[in-house]
Image (cartoon, rainbow, N blue to C red):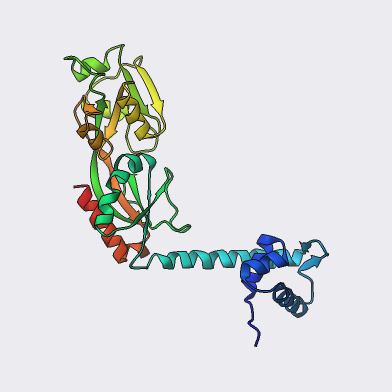
Length: 293
């Protein structure tokens, strides 16, 4: 008995490929099987779904209605199977992290993850992940948190600290004297100043009780790791935060030049409620918590 091909995948494939033969190739069946299935449907409905010529097919108004419904149906099924993948107890964890955290903390610690039996595939993305689409399992977010609709676990509270290369701040000047000097440049994270995380010089100055000269030289960047690299290169004093600066300080590339100030924002591990119930999530959370102590 010939295998009956479900209609939704057939119509969706034709809509995407605009070709019976290419649709059949995607579905792994013969073109005749696709043509026969569509002919059966058209005969049952009493009208044509596609206008056929020797070179191309054109979707009729009736066909457009059914193809749109088929595409929506198939997309829902694909998303459902993607979500089912998150219930697996073994395999790679797909972790989304912002570029600064990826460069400054995650990459240097990936070897330790492997030693802990954890295989991580990084998705480096500065935009929040939509867990209802795609295959990302979890993400590390920096913000006030928690995040409504997601399972959120606090990983580490953060502090904000002014840093500079040792050569840039040579001398006995206090921090207040440095930021009031015309020969000092402040390095700013433009995104941190507007994304609600309070990762900004204005927040730091307010909490530290110091006054920033509005005329002070400043350079702005769109990523926190670029701010730190500019500081390493002797371009000015940058703001650093927990997890992003410890490595560079330990290696002598940077040094704190002002007091550390506690932030309202922190690092959170977020994921869908489904993934939070898996062994892979527990292993990831345990490893991140241990590494961030």
